Image (cartoon, rainbow, N blue to C red):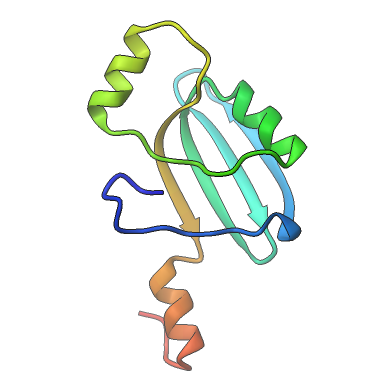
Length: 104
């Protein structure tokens, strides 16, 4: 679920193809594949997210607002902090493909 709460993308666990967690020392990234689609999640404290993805137990990944991120960073805890989520291919491209149109 995206910060604007107007967009939602669903990926079925039956299509789960794996994920890769990287940490460049500043921001952590998890790339997840679901069939021919995928998402890239950026943020902090991803150990629980990595575990949940590995076990197929993650119900959703929700972007946090700037205020939520600041509050979570100031506090203690291990809940994943989600800065951004990108889906691939982009949703408008999928819709255009279904309609038989050229990609925007």
